[in-house]
Length: 231
Image (cartoon, rainbow, N blue to C red; front, top):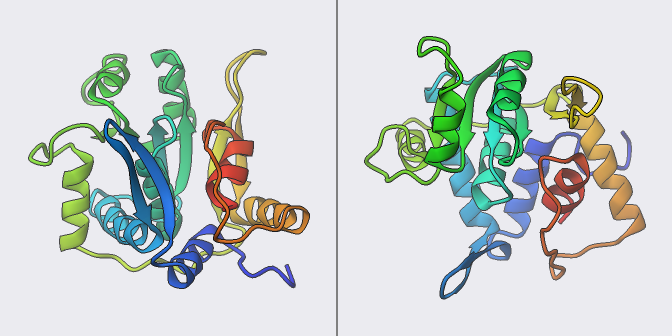
């Protein structure tokens, strides 16, 4: 562990926000161009999301599902979970609802963040009403209590500081494709991922002037590590 500037993803993110607050972190395509989010702006969103997740009952060790393609909201949810000591369980939008359900049950997921209403409906339609996991939906309007904006608003009203995270705490479950049977969840600790990031930085020196075009799915460990965290 010696020589590594960070041992967990929560402190890594906080350090990046502190040192690069005004620098652009993410660019999201819009019909009229790109919407750029600075490190400081993303940090504020993560703070709000962390408070909102905590208000929804998410705490250290809980598993949070994420059914979305790569997006700012994917990253915000993930870093908010890391600060709570919660475990991120990403899933692909293109997977069959039965696979989502299997992963939710296998990982004992407490809450699922869905990119769109259609995903949430396809997920919950496979469950009895009293057993479906709590869902938060990114594309719903702010006045909807199940919307991501409502979660952020609640988190701003009920802020929660990031915890001190152990390098041995679990950060994510990455599930296999299931081509040889049911998907298998690989448990990845903060140390697992941080050691990969540190090794990548030794092989490929990066600065805050560099940019990466995200094309690998963050639900996959390579895209998760090399695209989301490394820059």
